[in-house]
Image 1 (tube, rainbow, N blue to C red):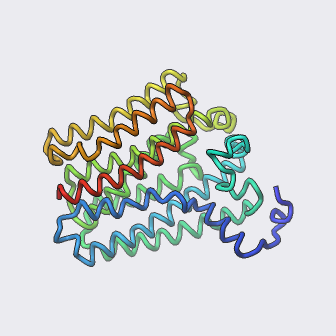
Image 2: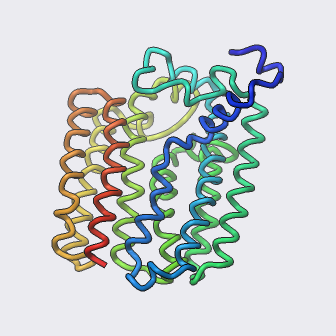
Length: 316
């Protein structure tokens, strides 16, 4: 660890900015693609409404702030309990770079990271408040879910530390899925079958990255006292859970088509995504390469967003 930085001396401005970008994990922009997904679900006339477009844009700024705070606090906790030091061993550098963890190499101090987390949270709350106040619709359920989303996100590994108390998978699924459901409520005002489907898929895609990371991180997380499914379940049972989650992707798509929530042909647009998911399961569960499977999960998430946007433009 860099003694210079830990003593509080200033690093060059460019390096400090790069360190804060790493702390905020801005390279992981998948959550913020939800605005495009929601926009394509809106009726064609609403897509041109400036109020709806404004709401989606400002909400996205809010998500950036809340997400930056969440991951910054997560890094602080991982730094304090030593789990990041273990899980981001240099031997894994090819697939998991320590450059994403600026506390580990001393580019930022713990105090700086905590201050950044609170500043990002405050900024995110301001943007979310502005979006809610100026949105075309304000259904009570969307307002309550906004508060709920902020609460569980910030408490993920800081404060209540939900991810250390068995809530990791549920928080990841809900917090990601809600960034589709909430904007749709604030711009359209109603719940529909298509948004229920795509909110679940969006949350699941994020979860199907994390569950493979947890296989790789089980020793470090156990030593740090984190309790997630990878730690609480025997390895065969945990692999079964991952397989069921992966299968649920196809099940909900078929079910949505069968119930008329989306057109019958909608599932064909997502067929390439299902093929990638099969490869991901084979990589992580059969060939036992969780970090490569994790990387495939990230690629599947972005592919899914592209496919679902195209499908929405034809379906709505």
